[in-house]
Amino acid sequence: DIATRAVKAATLGGYDVLLLDTAGRTHIDEELMAEVAAIEKITKPHETLLVADALTGQDAVNLAKNFGERLALTGIVLTRVDGDARGGAALSMRAVSGKPIKLIGVGEKLDALEDFHPDRIAGRILGMGDVVGLVEKAMETVEVDKAEALAKKLKKGAFDLNDLAEQLKQMQKMGGMGGVLAMLPGLGKMKKQLDAANLDESVLKRQQAIIGSMTKAERKTPKLLNASRKKRVAAGSGTSVQDINKLVKMHRQMADMMKAMGKKRGA
Image (cartoon, rainbow, N blue to C red; front, side, top):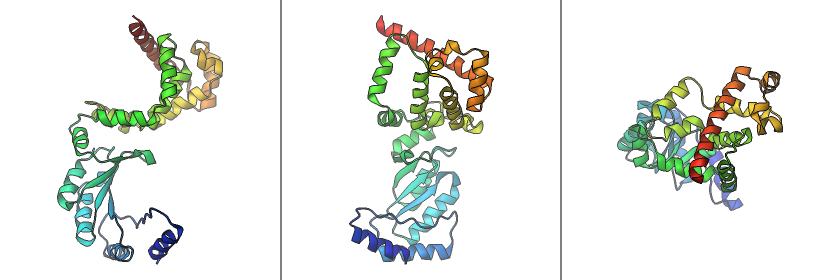
């Protein structure tokens, strides 16, 4: 009844797209399967996509097989491909269901939904990364004017905590440290270690909170951060002085590296 009303409302409203999301399930339930089949029969959708979780392994494959037998599936959306499975389920689901995998989910945000490229998934499974995907994601998220402004500062050997905050923000847009590492050749194992230690989103947010608790002068000139200032920043950001020291050290190392790069370009 809800599906019928939704189609009617979309038609009267002149909407181009109507998405009907049925109840999720991790195993075959005859009552729910009958409901989905009835909805498909009534609405006659142009696309019938099965959304499956890559981390459920064989259960996801069995689900695809059963759905394919009951519904006119047109494709599969595979989520959590950023997890330990790394997309191995994609190969099995394609073979068992005979249906194409159209999209993959590599995170929880809307921009973490990607077109499926078999060659790139194969690269991730083999630990070879997906450099092309990384470049595409960077092109989508990096703001050109800000990148150019940073490049000019680097030529002068300047890299303050405001710049570091901007880089952390860009990394978060690209899926965090784990999202970036998963796409770099040979670094997939490091992403697993990050996940196991919960050192991805939480670290980025903590570092952003630390920088956000500093004054403009402190962000511009980190050397101003003496013991009392660090205590104040730690209290304001809900972190510890040790966290402040780690961030300052990381910034110093990055600044030294950026300065060296700037000299080489200028040579």
